[in-house]
Length: 611
Image (cartoon, rainbow, N blue to C red; front, side, top):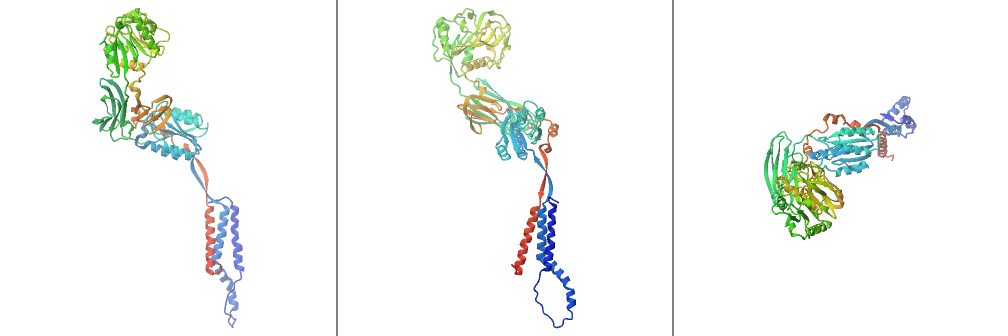
């Protein structure tokens, strides 16, 4: 025990005058005096001895001496030296909120550890597909409140970007960045690289690993494709366990639920197909006991499609006419150049196919008016285009001749050519053409002639496809992708999004021209930019977006994204905290003891009748 003021201990000498006062204090004593005083001198010799015995036995003297000593101790300031670990002042917490952090309470563990590491000033960054700044420069109380409101998403995490964002929010050369993660996987740059960059700004960067090994079975991919009776959804299920697993697949539509029993061997994956997926929402769920629930379900959304009126000017039963007639949302009307003047009111798209005829002038006037009003026209390849003076000014290309065998090449990425194997089409005859200024060329032949191009005329669009629909120039009509191409083309021209734009992976970003009301799987909000970080159905107006995890890396919850050695090398409480010396004050004990002595003295005086 040490003292802040040792000189105050001299006050304990106050017990000396108390003893003297007790010695000099006169006492009234009743006694009997004998007639014989023979032994008077002997008794006086024993008086001093009996006096000291009486003093020692007097409780008041002892209590008063104890009171003086304790007051002296209190004045001297007794204390015990202490040393404790204290979190540094500026702390930036980077919390991994990826899908794998939902496995077996990993995210909850990270939040608990984060509470223990709060400093005087706290910044919290949530690591998802995009880093999210949850709070900056907050007090421990405010930071604790924010931590309690956080949740893990269903996306991957860009840990490096989150670390750099956290580092930017700290004063240069001060503070610590604490990264709490399972480190199973990450997107973007390596967290080790980001740590080096943050340390170059003078910040400590500490890795804190959370979680333990977990079992998992999940849906890791899903593809929605057009089928004759609607749509077909093909999905892949993978078993990440070291043992075989049996589970039930529940397929729920607006019409009810169908269950199927499945089995997978250890580390095996299989694909399954759900046929006849129709308009509305569909839910595919794995009923299995595992650590991660977000990848046990996949959602499908197919919006109702309005009818599109298509005027096909060409031969009935031609490949293009048949392909256009397949989708139930297309209302295909048949026409011919031989009719001359035609009525285009209420038509969405006009397709001018190969009839071996040039376009009559009166029809050309109607087509131009139709385009200026916002309509769309598709012109197919034909020998007649070489001398068709009516269509010549409307086309995005100048047709100059016919060519023999050629090879097609995709020149530009576009939704119209995505998934369409133009490079596999065998071409025996095509048109030689030159693109006009302002035209966009998507596909060309080996000699550079545009084969698929478009441009704007008035408020409408003209699409040029330099391939005949008779099936005599090439084998494109025999390809299974031929009707899909026409579906894509009509949907694009009429502004109808592809059905896959309503079925997205977690982590996708939706942007709107203005703030809209969005109902997510867990809340309702207004925004013009929306990160889809939950699994479920998002509703925007009348449109429903299905969001599924479909992420094999995040489903592999036991993967090692950052090596165990690196995590251990960059971890440690010593880097998060500093040792701070302190004092354990004992003066209050001395004061408490003095008050107790004074109280006991009052009790003694009360019993003697002196109070």
